Length: 105
Image (tube, rainbow, N blue to C red; front, side, top):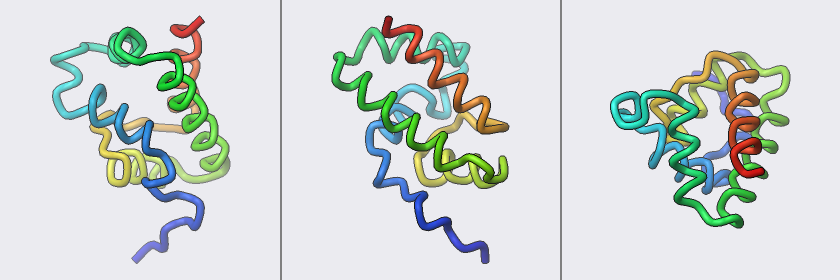
């Protein structure tokens, strides 16, 4: 059994878990078609504080995932945070962060 990294716990990322469950759930391809469209829906629905909190959590997560395997990333995002979107690399998570930041400007 693989031991969980000490700094990766789902309850440390409540906004991110909510985002994944609400916008990147199992039906997100049918509902939003693309990651960009899911982000646009979130930005339209969320208030500025909710957007800032999500950006902050994504920044923290991308830092904590530096040097970790893509498998660790996917297991955490899908298992602990409840996403059905499976990022293949830390760079895809950074792309998500950049999309949210760009949409909020």
